[in-house]
Length: 210
Image (cartoon, helix red, strand yellow):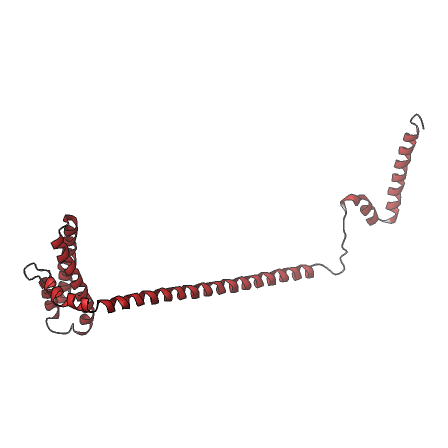
């Protein structure tokens, strides 16, 4: 456990942080030699990290595994050994140059397949979302119609069967009120109306010229 912690600290500080700062200095000063040196280091270190993922899973039980890994990182970084430059020139560069066309072809195919996969996935997602929206709208519309139907039936059941329904016209409220009164009261109201209109006729006849 202690060896693992020390190894992670060494890889983080000497394998990543210091080379990152040195790369920044090379870019800032526009030193071509240092720039090329650190580019080679980062290529080799990327391959080392990819290999480390597998070796940590299957070979970490090997005695002095973490100590060997720390020594390897220091060997890559040291300006005396120049391990990263040596590995790049002897192994990495010749292998990549020999397989460059095949690697470029695989990358192009992966990009095309990835683009097609993303497009198909997007179409399927849109179709699923549209279908779900339509189903939700249909369910909500059906629930709303059922609720309105239940409300209307309850309102109809609440009205008594023998309750008379009266329609009131605002222009003929007085006549409608007279119809609802008893017959004797209707006659009295009718006599008053006749007297009223008789008096009006008498007054009109007293005007000159009549």
